[in-house]
Length: 318
Image 1 (cartoon, rainbow, N blue to C red):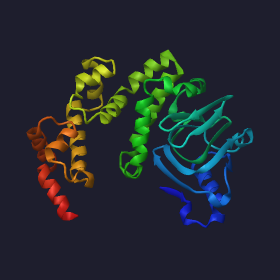
Image 2: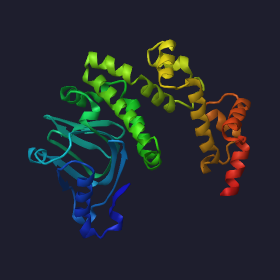
Image 3: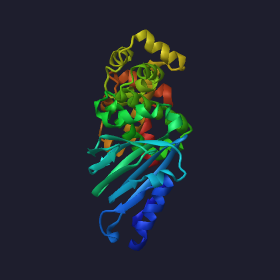
Image 4: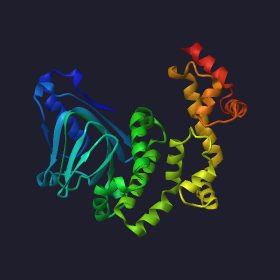
């Protein structure tokens, strides 16, 4: 859902609109624009995934300051995990200041004072989770914040948030949006426990989030033909037996899930304008199918058309 696009507003109304949109999407804070009001520009979106939400901002330079006075205002206890999409952020909380370059994560505990800014232009994709849904002690959360990059889960969670933001319109409208929010919350929880160094909690969270981490990792590596249960188990340091048990408990057949995900990706790729000149065999290979005949057979079983028939029907509709 789009909250704001200052391109549709007169320059004299943009500052007030920016502040109103931010207040709607996040917690109370002071906003300072780092430049003349006439040059303020911003686009903001907010999507709900159950009780969590995704808040994206692309804007000219500004500074957010959350003070003890703002903490006394009524607002829910929230943690925000953000990936810097563009520009370089500057974040200060708990007497520590860090620079946040593009494609790195930043954790904000919105129950405590903080400052965040960027100059010129920048962008951020923030997943906001109520503390009670995160189900972690505050000391673990606060210990994890400065140590996110040291966790082996940093890249996995970052890539998940990037993809979530890229497809947010469709994903938020899907019947599975709330479940996706829960799965994303579990990934964030696993990252924070990993970075926070709580050994007992880490063991518990690893067990609880194994399936979520497995499926997120597999989606990110679908184009690799050797991604199969054996490799997935090895990457996640579990036995094949344990992996199959976790999947079975959730009603997931891992082999069939991998095929279904690859087929769905291939179906989209076959009709994408950028793939118009790619052969069906090339698209199949790019989506992780090493055998073109097997790909065609499974595609027809899933969608009632061969890959070529699907591509041709799409061209006629277009």
